[in-house]
Each structure stands twice: as C-alpha cells, then as structure tokens.
Length: 167
Image (tube, rainbow, N blue to C red; front, top):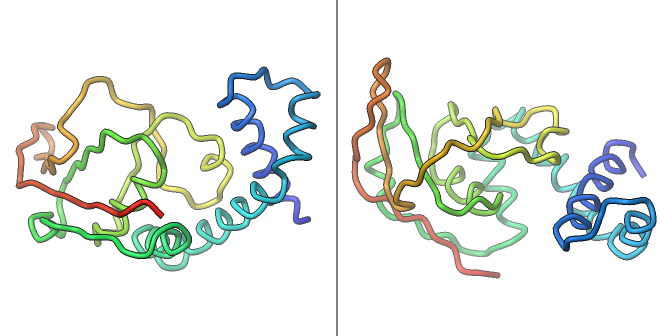
C-alpha cells in the first residue's frame, strides 16, 4: 500500500476511534485497523485523487468529481445571485465535508477558501484549500453574503439553496 494512503488511512482510523468515544490507544487503533482498514483505505485513495484534481482543475471541479462517489443528483437554486468575482462569504450550518463539497461544486470560483475546524485528513493533503479555525457565532445557513473589503461588512445578496438527496 502506498505510504501516503497508509498515512491518511491511519488518520481516518484514529478519527473514527475518537468519534465513537474510545481513547486513541494502541489496542483500539489496532482493532479498528483490522476492522476498517479497507473502507478507510478507499476513502484515502479518493482523498489523494481529489487532492490531485484540486491542483489540476481547481477546487470546484474536484468537488464535483468527489460528489459522484456519494450522490447522483444535486439541485442548486439561487446561484445566479452569487457574484463571479470580488469578496464573498457563504455560511453553512453543517460542518461536514460532504456539505462543503456540495457548496463548492456549485460555486464556480477559483478563489474559494474553506473556514473550518481542524480536519487532520485535509491537513495531510498537498493542495487543500486554506483551513482556518471555526469562527464564533451563528449565521442563517441559507444566506449568501457578499463582504465588502476592506471594511469587512457583509450584506445579503439573496437566498441560496443547494441541496442533494441522501444516497
């Protein structure tokens, strides 16, 4: 198995162990490696391919490709209200990577930056978008905001609804 795939697989397994509330000790890591190595290795392979596509084709195209592995149809409404250039902030109340991929696949811009909590899997890819700490506060999940630089003030530019059925 490729060393990059092994490294990412180990990170995913450690995240899985922690997600179920177990300590990330060697016995649990070994058990989960035995039980989940194959699906986590497949996810790592997809992650490395996604990383290569980010470098070659940009984040929106790589996101579109990644989603073909999890859903068959995505509906986007209101994307015509998203400016093609200039400062823009899109806020989602779902922290999962899946939701971010859906949004990024429908926003046809190459200047996307992902503001999130730490995601060790993404930190180990070579071409991820900039990952920052999660900002405090809450905003409505269906609001698209355009931020005026340099003042940093934001104004709504219209509702945005991007959805995908569960696969």
